[in-house]
Amino acid sequence: MVFVLIHRRKSVREVRPLRQIIHILGLLFLILASCPMAGAAEDDPEKGSLNKPDRLEWFRDQGFGLFIHWSVDSQLGVVISHSLVGASPEYTDRFFNELPKTFDPDRFQPKDWARLAHLAGIRYMMFTTKHHSGFTMFDSKTTPFGVMHTPFHRDITREVFDAFRSEGISTGVYFSPDDFWWLHQNGKTIRRSVPDVQPRNNPGLMQYDQSQLKELLTNYGKVDELFLDGEAAGLRDLAWKLDPNIIVTRGAIKTPELTVPGMPLPGPWETCMTMGTAWQYQPQNEHYKSGGELIRLLVQTRAKGGNFLLNVGPKPNGELPIEEEERLREMALWMFVNSDAIYAVRPWVITNEGDVWFTKKKDNSALYAVVESNTPWPRATWKEFTLHSVRATDKTEVSVLGQSDEVVEYHAEITPKSTWHQEKDGLHVRVLQAQRLQDNFRWPNPAVIRITNVEPALKPPQVQTTGSVVGTSGEETLEGSVLDMGDQPSLEVTFEYRPVSGEDVNSRTAAWTATPTQTISKPGAFTANLKGLDPKGAYEFRAVIHHPLLPLYGAELKMKR
Image (cartoon, rainbow, N blue to C red; front, top):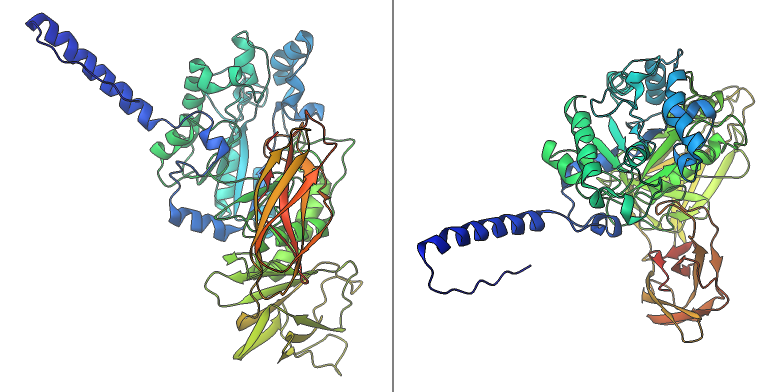
């Protein structure tokens, strides 16, 4: 914004008001220049970020976090907050005025949560201090709609933070800029993701949110992470002002929900994953992922350079559901053995070779090959792997995490020494499953092979998703480009697409659909035409290379419709 002032001779009386006007305009310019444009952070969360690089490096090293969704409506076993959107006046009145009168979690023992999280290898946590309903799970002076105005009348956030800090786990604040209670109190229709209910268009809501965020970041000790589940403008900069070392996750880095991206994303990122289908406790109509599925999601996220934020939803009485405790304990055993492959790691030259996924220490001191399988690897049996992307050196050593390579219980005739040899097609590894982790001798979860002093043995191709064009007859042309053929003389390429209509901006649940494959023999552009898509629907797509070892993906882009 540029102001042009036209000068002319003035009387003394005219000069002073003009100086005041110039001063005011200058202040306005400074304010506008310092404020992020509405929506800019949401379109590109890293734009204007003040996250410190060293703090982001620390965050990436942690790898494994715990999300906790818990609010007043857990008593109903209902989707957290969202039942208020489109609700009748009677339902809304009962929610805001009656539901808090029955919130009294008499079995709330946050130290039990924290001990279990520590055992499971959790390094940081994120607690829902205020979800979209506006119910504050902390002692806020800004509203009567909060935990301090319930029969429980205790500051849950403070107790949760104290418990997790006592276990050496860093604390994070989940905070919703959307606030349904505030909208209701101010005569506005309860909804999300539309401009007229956003804080940027409601100065009163912005001030209200800022007051609450200031309470959380000044009254509760050191908060390491902040997750802003809504438009971050006006709030993330306040957080960095209050604590320049705080890490803003959602609102400043990419945080996909319920999905793991196809390829490593540039820089730090974090995927948020439920154990079942719900974020908050739901006693019925819930289907939990197995512990093995969650371990695999953790591994795949770390192989792609992301952090894994796994959610739990406490029951109304304050206990964790037994299904969630069981899964955390299964993960605890796996992490107790294999956590070296999870902490302070970065992606390898490729993410996986089939069912073998890779992470490497960021100092390159070790490469980890995480061996997945649909069937358990029986104890006291050998397996051989050829790792095509790995080249050994004369200093290479191979071992299985958790094992000594010396003894197999009840099998004195076996010496479980890991061995390897290098061939033209890759590193050949022979290892034994020696450690007894369960009574039936059939521990079903991935084993991890540790390999030191190795180098990449291949150069993977690179693909880019470039854009889309809508034709005059409504067909969609998807555009991609192979930037580098790697070490392949020819490649199979395709596109994958999926609908995103009706999804939260960060969540993804629909499956991908592939276009027919094409064969290319040199770098360059390729396209595919789509017909019959819903003209009112929203879709995203990505370019794909079908490499002999694994699929390689370009970035996921929205179709221009």
